[in-house]
Image 1 (tube, rainbow, N blue to C red):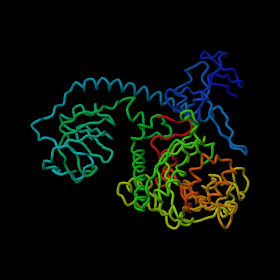
Image 2 (spheres, rainbow, N blue to C red; image 1 turned 90 degrees about the vertical axis):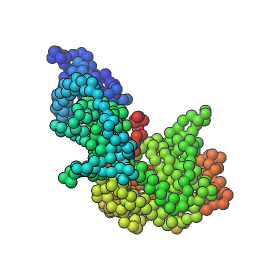
Image 3 (cartoon, rainbow, N blue to C red; image 1 turned 135 degrees about the horizontal axis):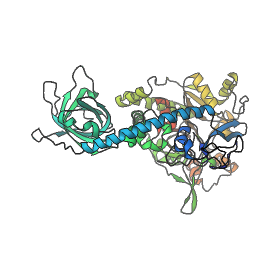
Image 4 (spheres, rainbow, N blue to C red; image 1 turned 180 degrees about the vertical axis):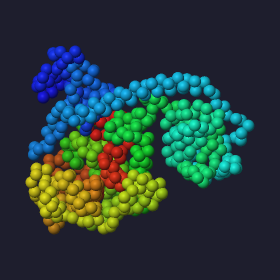
Length: 588
C-alpha cells in the first residue's frame, strides 16, 4: 500500500466496506504514527506532517467507528542502508493492531467506569464543600514551620502521652492513604516530606477534597512516630485544622490520570511540566541541580574562573550543517554551538576558566544521546601540555563524582536511581585512535557499511559504544586523524596525520567529553583557515589570540545530560533535562 496523504485511498486489497457491510466508495482515512517525533497530544491531527507517537493514542483519537470506512494506521519505519537512512510508511502490523484493539476495549470500559465514578464524586464534592472547617482559637497559636526544618528552635515533639508544639506547615500533597477513620497525607516542600494525620472532625471531608498536588496549610501538634510505625523524619503532624491553598483537580484531570506513574515519560511529552513532579523524574532534576553545583564547586576549588559567552554568533565551529540560523537585525546569525572560541579569548584575562551555558545543534537526530539544546560545560586551560589536559579531564570527572557522593542528599539520589553506581577507578584507560581501529577489527565490529574499519574514518557511535561497554571502564580515546576533527585542533608533533585530541568514553553512554589542544601557531592557524575557506576577518578575534602573545592551551566540552545519563543510569539524555528539545519537539 502506498499512502499519499491523510485521506489517500488504499489501492490494494479488497474494497473497503461501510458500516452496513456494503462496498464503500469513500477512501479510508490514513492515520500516521511516528514513535520518534510524533505527539500523542489531544490536538494531534495524525497527518504525515503531524503524526501520533503511539498506535494506541492514534486508535483512541480515531477509533474504527470514527469514519466510514474505518481508518487505517501507518507507522514510520527507518531502514538503514549504505546511502543513509530510508524512511517508509507501512500499515501497522496485525499483531500490533490486535494488541491495540484489546487494550482499547479495556480502555472503553475503564473510561465508562471513571465517568460513573466522577459523577458520584462531583455529587459528593458539592456536599463536602458545604462543610465548613473552623480553627479552634482556644488552642495555642501555631508556629510557622518549614517541612524541611530538622530541629527548629522552639518546637518540641510530642509523643503518645505528651503534647507537642502546635505548628503550621504549607506544602503540596504528594500522596494520600485513606482508612475508615483516618486520612494519611504526605505533604512535601520538595526538600522533605511530612506525614499529616487527619481524624475526627477535621477528617470529615478531607478524603473527598484532597487530591494529589493540592497545596494546603495544615495546623496541628508535631509528634514523634510511635515505635511500631514509620514516617519520614520519624515525626508526624496530628492535624486540627487546614486551609486549602490551591486545589488540584480530581477525576479525568487528576494528576494521576494526566501523569500516571505507569506511563514512561517518553509517552507523555506534552505533559512534561506535570511529569516532572513524579517522584523519579523529580529525583533526576534534583540530581541535575546537585551536579551543576558540584561542577562549580570543583572549578572554584581548582581556581578556575567562570566566564560567559554570547549565544548569538556569526561564526561556526562544529560545521555549518548543524547551525540554527536566524535574522539578527537584518544580518545572518546563528545560535551558538559552543562557547569555546570566546573562552579562548578570555584566557589572557581570566586564566583557566569555564562556562556552563546552553549550546544548540541543528542535527536532525533522534538518538538517545542527542538534543537540539543542551547544557554545555566547557573549560579552557592555559600554558599546558596534552597530558595535563588528559589528567585534568580525568580529575574533573572523578572529582565531581566524589563531591556528589560525599553530599548526603546527592548521594541518596544517585543510589536510589542507580544502586550499582561506583566512582570510576583511576587512571582511566588510554587508547589511541589507531589502537581502537585494531580492537574493532580484531573483535569483528564492522563500520556502518558492514566492512572493517580503516584508519582515517570516523568511528560510528554504535561501534564506539560497543567497544566501551565490552572493555567496561572509562576510556581516553586519543589522537584522532586530522580530517575528522575541527580545524583548530593542534597537530601531533610526532605524527602530523593525527591531532592532540581526545574523547572520553564511558560504559553505557559512550562519549561524554570531547577535548583537545588548540592550534597555537598564528601562521599555521591562518593557513588552515584559508584551506577551509573560512572568513579571516570574521575569525580575526580568534586568530589574534595567537598574534598577541600565544600560548600552549587546550580545552574540552561535555553535555551535563550525558554525564547524568551515565551516573544515574538513564536510557536517554531526554530524561536528564527538564524540557528536552529535539527534532519535532519545542514545547512546552
